[in-house]
Length: 90
Image 1 (cartoon, rainbow, N blue to C red):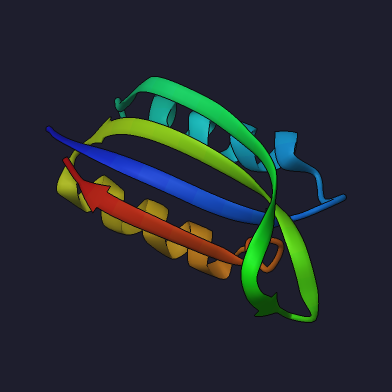
Image 2: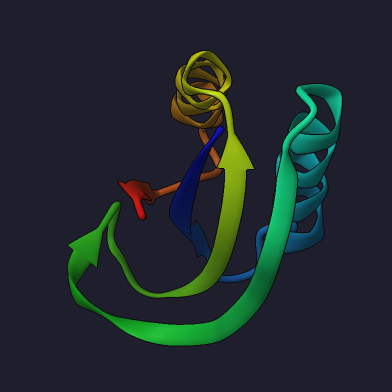
């Protein structure tokens, strides 16, 4: 099982709780573990993304199998309410 840091950028006003629930439910379903979850709040973006200047940031430290990480990556990529995301293997 590998440990990953996941940072997600969500537009301000979007349902942040829905994204958090999606990630936690995925981790439970795939026998993963979320050891840390932080809401970094609303921050100013370095450059406009889809004409937005601010967004909410969510941070997770997740332990998952490699195959499950790839599946979560696909799931996040398909979600149109997520502006940007980044997985880093720790």
